[in-house]
Length: 125
Image 1 (cartoon, rainbow, N blue to C red):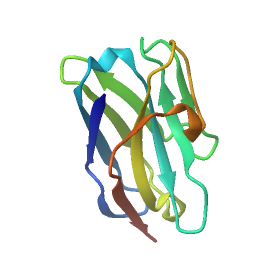
Image 2 (image 1 turned 135 degrees about the vertical axis):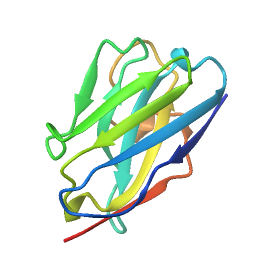
Image 3 (image 1 turned 180 degrees about the horizontal axis):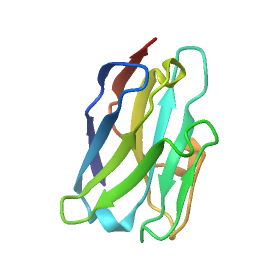
Image 4 (image 1 turned 45 degrees about the horizontal axis):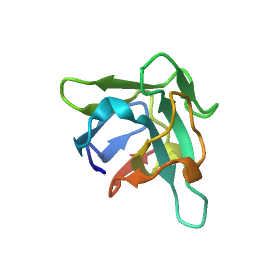
């Protein structure tokens, strides 16, 4: 079991930046592949970034590539999502998730066993 708590969401203007944090507790953090997802009402939860448990592989959706960066700090048991050049279409609830699988990149919700409570990101135009 691992517990995940996101923080760092808020209201910003287009073009500004935010950094989301996801603090993990419980089992050793490095056992999990991690992902950041977002969801808006009426739509499915989509993966915007993922990182393998070793940190050797990362994934970004086309909509955030070049603007968002996922990273991990194993000493702090924390995964981050640095979001730059935010756009109104980035407005969503953002979730971090942990996939207890062999090392790899996982971009669909079905692979993830543990989820945080979500943090709201709102980008005004």
